[in-house]
Length: 431
Image (cartoon, rainbow, N blue to C red; front, top):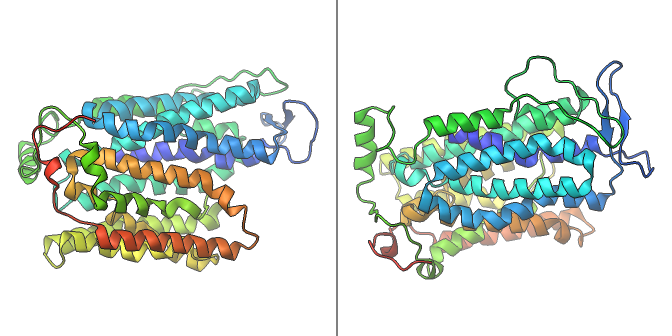
């Protein structure tokens, strides 16, 4: 369920990167709000817009700004209220807003910016909320594999995006990108007729909307509440997590957290996203690294849990090892072969520092993850501006490698596994 939720959320988060290529009219410089065109004779016409590169950049980053505002509060309230409600509601809201993007684009840029920002606010809570399930659902010897399977939905989402959305841009047109991952029930072939500045859309249902209903029906925050799992499975999960203290009132020891270098190591390691390789704009060739990344992610989690179950390596050694293998290769290549190798290596960080907070502060995993997500979003926002100062792309890769290597070294030195005292206490000072 978490895997699919990540998949749907990722496609909604990144679909504009594909759609905007078809949405922008690079040849017509008129002042009209859009110009209708048709890819195939007899097919529905779709609008194109005269947006300059600055506007395009703002549209693409609007969701990042929105997500940055809510990702940390989302991590906090997921610990208080549980991840089910927040993740379900945020996915539902994001799905509805995604359906409205073509209408908003045709109504005017202010409406489109508003939809994108509010959708970002929703997405920020979604990714933070999904992290709240693992402290109660993932046994220690299986948590790397289980959490990685859930997170692998983001990679699968990107893969589907670069393969499928390029086709949808051509037939039946870019508006279908915003429908296909929200569409579930279709009485007829989707018909869109967009001409001039006043267009109407007729949309039936949405996969994201329907999946939100399924989510609320089948997902539970605690195995004690789940009516469909067996008693033996419930007992296994609860007994394996017996050592994790849990106070009835969830509270946040923020000051104590900020003094722990292990948390700062994870936050700094998340800067790997500063100059991340962009796979969304190059079709099938760029999808190859995503395929190998998913394979590496899944296989790496199995290897990590195997090393732990057989007591071949200590827990913190496993996390540091996978982080060491993954981080130096991020953003270090331009050739396709090395892009594939880089993506495969990069995916191993899911078995490294990403799951490490489950070891030393499982009760606050969602909040710590939200801090790392906030750093990723900030780095994603500022990276285009930093890149603009470099004439040579080679220098960008050098800087990227240096930043990622610094994060890896910092985590390698200060990462730890022992549960912190403030994560065990029954009474904690509120944030």
